[in-house]
Length: 235
Ligand code: HPA
Image 1 (cartoon, protein in one colour):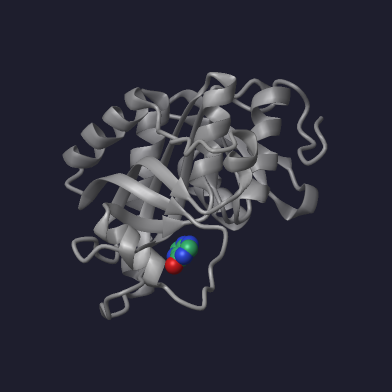
Image 2: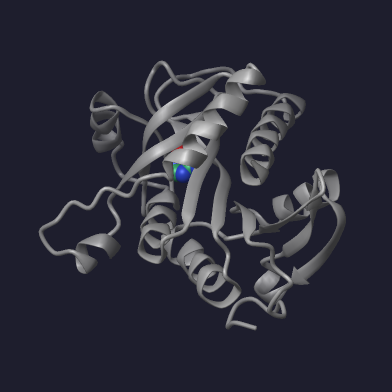
């Protein structure tokens, strides 16, 4: 047991999917895993272990934001020996060539969080995906013919801002989309020498008025992302 996860040692697989929403963890376990069981309900942050194509895999909710995901990633690596972590989440599109329902593989993450500046004063540390996972996810996503981007994202500390000007400017410098967790995931994975990747679906666009997608369309895109993540995790 760790402080926020009540699983016994050995109940969590060494590869794991990390949705922000714990109900999505349940959906993934019920839809894609065989023989799954729930190992965590502390604070409602559900976690499950089962098998996918015969390989043992877990799925754990992380909550929203860098402080929340940092708690779960620390405990999964340090207390449960997890070695391969794939975040599956949503993001807001920033660049005009990114559209609602596209899938984004986060190569690296910029952030306005103070966490890495307090770790490395005067250094702009660059949290980066594991290349083998990124390469495999790109291969699998291309085969599925999913609209796919690989590039940099912003892990923001705030969802609601007075002005989006700085986000727009980051887009001009290559940032594809904004979410709230990846810089912490990649930094912790690097610290502990394990593999991490973030895969995102674009749930909304910050600067363009693209028509809303239907719930069914959003579910299809979400399922494409989960298939990429699961097949990458067991590769
Ligand atoms: N901002 C931050 N995180 C997000 C967004 C957003 O617009 N959309 C989905 N996750």
